[in-house]
Length: 126
Image (tube, rainbow, N blue to C red):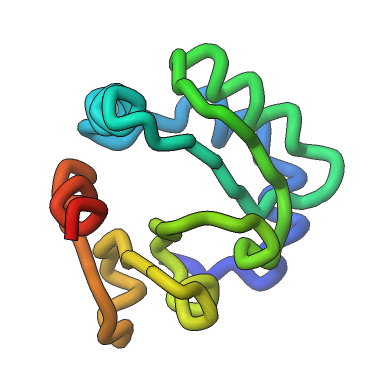
């Protein structure tokens, strides 16, 4: 598979297609419902390139993904959260309670890790 040389150009050029056909991670809605029942606030934090954020908001609406707040920022630590779930180790290393969503590209991360979204509930209850 060819390597993407310029991430910015790739996402700006392909954003509409990526978000039109992007699937919802298994267990997303169920996890959010359980968190809401526990009176947790849901903050979605995404690193999107300027000018394509609307594709994310459309995707969230089309897929009926609930959230209390939505933030677009490269530095996810700027948003005050009790737990940060992410698949990028660079986003996790500075957070007070990071949780890594297991992916092939983040195997070097040594902190808390989940393989399924439902596992996050156990971490929150610790």
